[in-house]
Length: 289
Image (cartoon, rainbow, N blue to C red):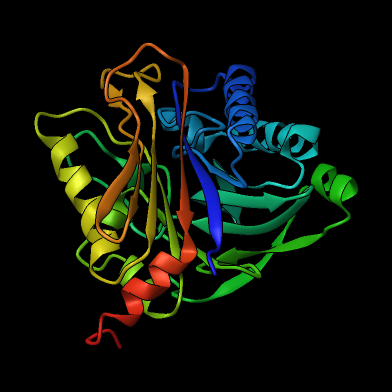
């Protein structure tokens, strides 16, 4: 018996500190994903605030406005009956983290901080963010009053965790965690996670798109599973160009891929996958333990 699921990855042309514009593009991608039949939507890294805010990540207003935008997205009827995650900066115990916020039907399920920062090339992430170092651990995050009054929630888990549903299990990586020698997708796959989600802010370099595609394929090939990769597009007010190429891989094969270069502010790429294909692939892998 098949268990089909439709998932969506969004490629967005976001701008640093353009909170209203960023929200509009996020909402457009959610609406398009819904119209394409997706039950799950993910987007690029730090899509709410924009990736290239630089030292504005040292200002508390950046975090406040991110929560204000999340509240509007969270309460929108467009998001009903879809599992959605968005990228935004979050302060926890006076430490700044680069996070994914996962929600469903007006309730926040998880805040997942980035665990591996990138400081090579044009990246300087440790200037603004700290890594979450507590593997397979969560803590209570006390939500802002405006979120608590709207959702009835006062705390949510923040940390290294996964989302389990009746049909499957989802885990998260953020950009550099895919490139790192100790990528978490293998441990998650061996623990039964079937869908790995990666939100990224990867800029264009010669041959980098080929390397990224190879990493995505291999991430789903070694232990089986589905890998969702969502990337930014455009310049985000910076001097580098984020080149899109959002993709969905299944058991080592790319099943859907977005454009590398385009003028579209919003591009949604979807794939319908039978979860039984993941289970059959893993059952046939006798060395998997």
